[in-house]
Amino acid sequence: MSQNPDKPHTAEEKLSVLEDDQEEKSVDNVDQSIRKRIRQSAPASHRDDTPKSSPPRLVSVEELMETAKGVTNMALAHEIVVNGDFQIKPAELPEHSLEKKVRDIVHKAFWDCLEAQLKEDPPTYDHAIKLLGEIKETLLSFLLPGHTRLRNQITEVLDLDLIKQEAENGALDISKLVEFVIGMMGTLCAPARDEEIKKLKDICEIVPLFRAIFSVLDLMKMDMANFAVSSIRPKLMQQSAEYERKKFQEFLEKQPNSLDLVTDWLQEAADDLVKLRCKKLLSHCSDDGAAGGASALCSTAVQNQAYLKLLKWDHVSRPFPETVLMDQTRFQEIQLELEQLLLTGTVLLVTFSAAGSALVGIPGFAEKIKTIIKVLLTGMHLPSFNLRESLATISEKVCAEINSCLSEHGFAPFTAERETVLKGQIQAVADPGNTICKLIDSRIQKFLESYLASSHQKSLPALPGGLGPIQRELEEIAVKYVRLVNYNKMVFSPYYDAVLGKILNKEESQLVGKSEES
Image 1 (cartoon, rainbow, N blue to C red):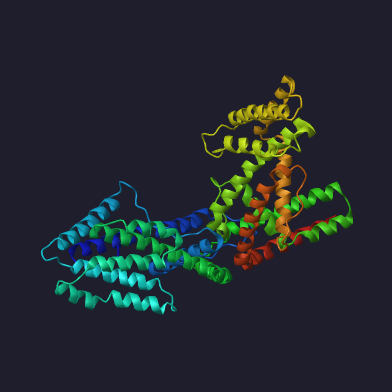
Image 2 (tube, rainbow, N blue to C red; image 1 turned 120 degrees about the vertical axis):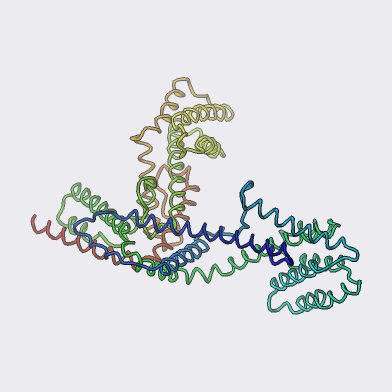
């Protein structure tokens, strides 16, 4: 509730300050968590070839507060740009929390005071007039510069000086003013609020009506804020990369070791690529091939390999690189989606292989199997989840669905022996070294790698064999993943280039040395 008149108004203000403090503490906790994780995750010792971080320096409380504010603003801008569904939502206090109890008591005291004033003989309208003033200011805040006629109407009807004179002379018709307010709210509100406006017209008592009006006005403020967010998103997209880079640089200046994890992450990606090149060179032993392999290690390839590593990250025991820390939750969600999709794709491939060509072309069959798998794999990342039991249940359901579908289309159902074999193959998906599961995983990774390498193109790369049944889900995840990666590259590419410049020079020197020795 905004400003309210008398003693209860003071309590309301105190409550508002209390709620604001809670929000600030929540934001501070997030910032503190980010900074703490970055500090804690910095390795105690570095590789011999890694430059030592700058020595620590003393910083003032003001500098720390300024840094925290910068991190908060950067995180908010990033959230608006990256999350297309971002919306500002009203803060909801826990049901039995002290804050909620205090707020409810203060609100009740205020509205009881208003009701007591209106029941006096003659009524006292001090509270009511101040509330009308607040309503007037809120309605005016919804208007655009071109809404001259509406602005004149609101200013004329809700003329507080005139309303005070009418109250002093006993001529104030407050119900008429409230009726105008509701009508104006109906004109200015979003279509989604039409039902709330309609409910206001059914309230007859003035105090509950005032209370409901302010409740709907709060919703309208939220709508206006979200409209503003959606309006600025295109412009923010253009400027946010530069803004985030600037804020990260300020943070880096105060925390000089804030790229240590990024350096390790990119170094590992480069090492992975070198190992892959060596395997290819051993399998295609040729001097020309060796020269080509040495020159193929480039900055873009290393970055793409690094981003693919984020999809296999151990979030429990390993800190996330600093430059992708704000998107850790998003990368983790994508990782979990891919893990579930991997099991789905493996079970589908096993099922279609066992069923033969009879079921491949039947409409809706694959979707039914996917639905069964998705339902039974719900919660697969929880500690209490038992994958083997779930796969056993999936195998039973899949066999039942196959026999039902075969019978429906005039085919002979599975024999008991074929059912046993298929159930065993499905349950074997839980084994860490399952060959089919590893094959599907490698093809998914190959598809994502190809999409990263050709992300400047509008069309998706060709789908590897065996992934057809999960094509739609995989492409949806790929689009979301590559959009996140490309934005991160846009923001932090100067830092990656600087780190990779040193790493690639070192790798090139080592390759040259080995070639000279040979």
